[in-house]
Length: 110
Image 1 (cartoon, rainbow, N blue to C red):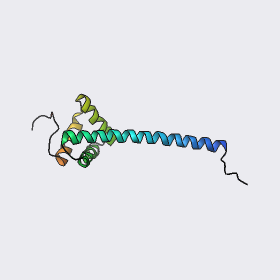
Image 2: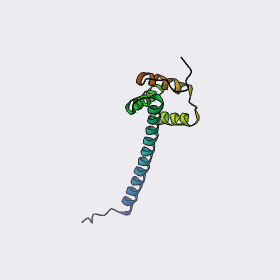
Image 3: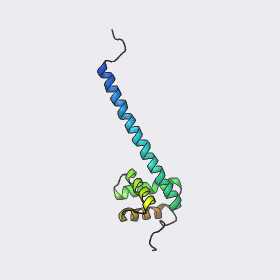
Image 4: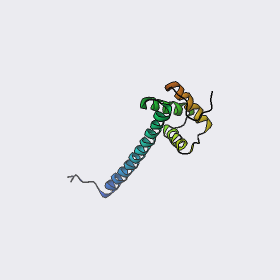
């Protein structure tokens, strides 16, 4: 006859699983916030819609083979200190050209 209770090992395993799940959820929330902030920068600086800002980030990620979260991080760093790797900047400009009406502010004239 079973009592419906798990043994101590099963409870420990379940606690571990829940702790891992909580950590994954924290990371997902953090990544989502970073991506949303980068989309906001694209909206403000690139004069695109939020959907176009998302498309710009995806394009840059795909064309540079850099994870989207990392691209978003680079854009936020650029917003804080003005530094961006040249290959990311070039791809960002191309993506904005495809999705939006303007150049990145501070870009050299064409």
